[in-house]
Image (cartoon, rainbow, N blue to C red; front, top):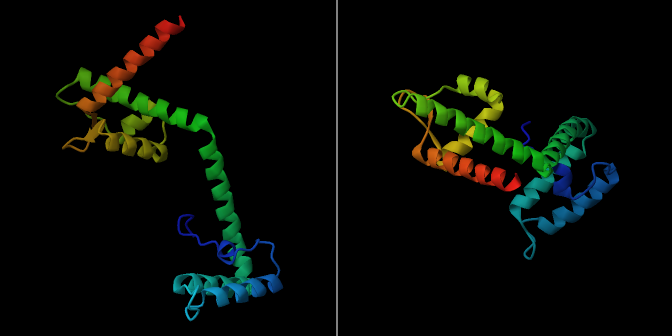
Length: 180
């Protein structure tokens, strides 16, 4: 199951993955009564349906064992994602890659204005960024309007991208002068 579509049944029942069968049944009965569509004050059809699905899976030992494997894999994925998000070096590394891509595309356009584009494979090779990571950076640079796809399918820097690259170059030169 894909991490983006994974449903955490333990979270739905508001219990620990270590909960025993008795706790699962007790909490299910409490939540089912609370969210039952017939309950005028707190009824919620969607929430009730989610609780029933969670209980059906977690109350059956074999289904729960299979689900626990998926739950652990998803928990590992979320932990890795949280670690990656909390590491500021990842963002700095991404900025370096994006600036490198712009510099490569800048140089390509400056050298050959008639044929300024490059393919993904060349960008992957020259930037040292693997294809699966390169896709993110190309998406970002396209969304910012700093690169675009040419009619022949190649990727090239735009005028806005040139302006950004020049501004960054000037900023880095100023910082270099200040530090020396």
